[in-house]
Length: 96
Image (tube, rainbow, N blue to C red; front, side, top):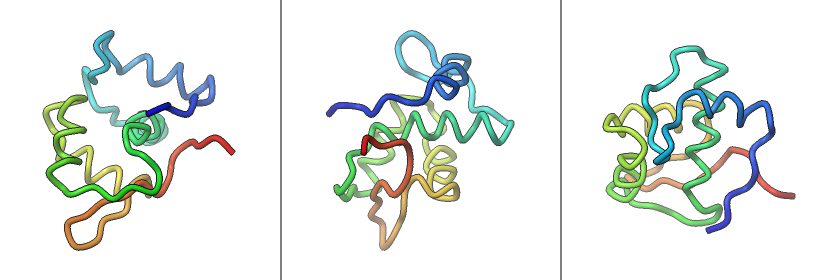
């Protein structure tokens, strides 16, 4: 899947939290930085596709061991939508 390039300012923030292997060394506590990292993470999910919770957990687990917190933040901040145990991407940077 091709990722949408993030804005340069967002990329600079994300670079502070992502290791060379793509995993997060920490989850940002500052809201603006957290949103930038969540925008980066939501790029792992294709627009228009529905994911079971187990697949969301597996995908997010590649970024950080606390996949449940990442999943919750993605939903709370509007990057993913959840209904009856299924998730789909509903936000983040996209090509137009």
